[in-house]
Length: 291
Image 1 (cartoon, helix red, strand yellow):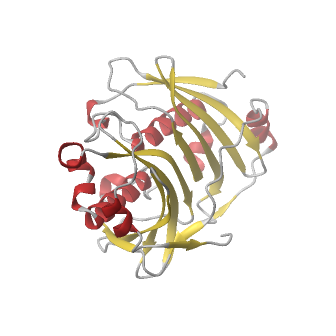
Image 2 (cartoon, one colour):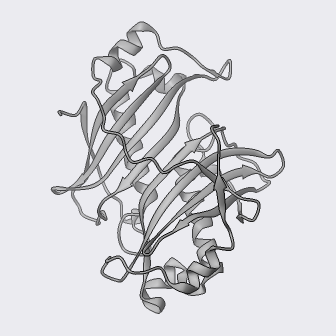
Image 3 (tube, one colour):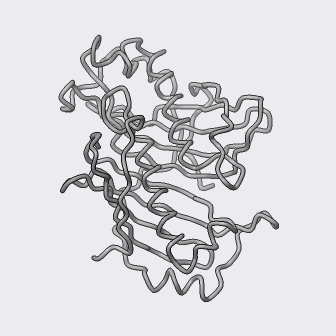
């Protein structure tokens, strides 16, 4: 199936994390770069200025992205097109290797009314003319942190904001990662990613991450919170759920589900250490209904 667009996204040295490859959160940034360019070069470019909000991401990580002078290639497809929503599918390719595949659901939003708006026939027609069927990614289920969830404070930085004046969708990947690393470090000091390869001989690899955006997040001086809990611990992997919340208003701004695999220094899966397994069972998740 021919993509609707192919976008070259240059890499930056600062995109690398402590494990020496591009951080999983930066993959969402590459998707955004490709998506924005696709829209800006088409007849629906005005939608970016009027309000196009990300409703949710599904990202499946298949291989690490290494730093190179050559850009990565993001292949983009248009999926389902509704009255006010549309879906974008992607492949992130380095060389001949598909490093990630992803889906993004977006909504046309009217900031003046504070509500989604229907696309005009011309807007919808432009997307529909480029639409094709996208194979679904495996569902991760619906979960939420339980009452005993791990809680980490979250301070929004001014640079986290986008042109709409609220926190950019990509930054939520960072927020969830910060809380997850804090939790694993408290459960087992050797589990901290910064020291894992040297001291413990293992590291964590993100293989899937889904984020649902439920409410806009604004800049303020008072901290928010990220709550994290364990959905499941397998032999070599674990699934976590996290929520970015406002402890003052009780609002849930986003919910993320993350699947991680425990690996050795060469990236081969190995059993989850018992110390970490016992520590993380302290913060159980619970099933969530719709909404």
